[in-house]
Length: 340
Image (cartoon, rainbow, N blue to C red; front, top):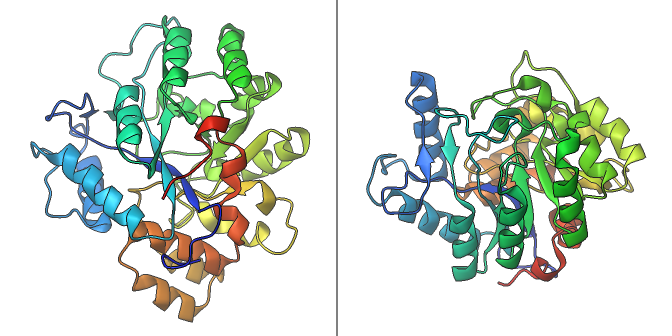
């Protein structure tokens, strides 16, 4: 798989973040000033993806981020990426949790960008406790939503709350998949760490929603609980459950790669490619675990396009070509055609 030799259907990255400060009217916002290390991490991410000369506070930051992401996608072997919105944080009673959350990306922002650029497939984000949750869901469906993205531990969503049943049933009826964060999290503010457990996704699965467990419930920090084995057990019960390999090229998450690769691997056949852009991508961790060769590590380290580097590292780990195209069969039907 290379930028010059596209597969049919073309590969998709199912986990790419949009970030903005909103100064140009996008409606986005960032709240990274609470701790010094968050601002350092954000600056490191910008340098890593090739935007080290752009300030987070720049008036045109949003436009430059989008333009750079488009350039990376067009120069990669990907046909498109799923671009993620980020809802605000709400209490269980539907009132907004003021002053909480690290960033916000409105649904209309990703819907608009996806209308303008065929390389972007829109993933909307709706907290099901919102008073207007069902109305917003229908609006987003009409606008062409391909996936719905939530971080239960960061958005404060107990997906098993029976009050959300109608929301999940509407998603299942519309064949709109749920991409839900599972496992630890250290980049975005966590509100309820208990919701990192993939078993929090049981009710949506019961309602017939196609669920993609982002990160396949792997741990992020060294002290995080490890839920990968819980996720693997759940795959046997729920045929509508899948996982993605987003951020598997950071120190902790990719440690189970060798269990998920090889011919007719039952775990690997339920995993989808995602990068978690702009999270840093390094092959060092795969090299140290013995998942890739020294030659592959050196080859991939020379790839400056971080979206392509993540693809090539996963190929070197042993993920098959289908890993990068499998999401086509899960996307909301009318959004499943990636245009290049």
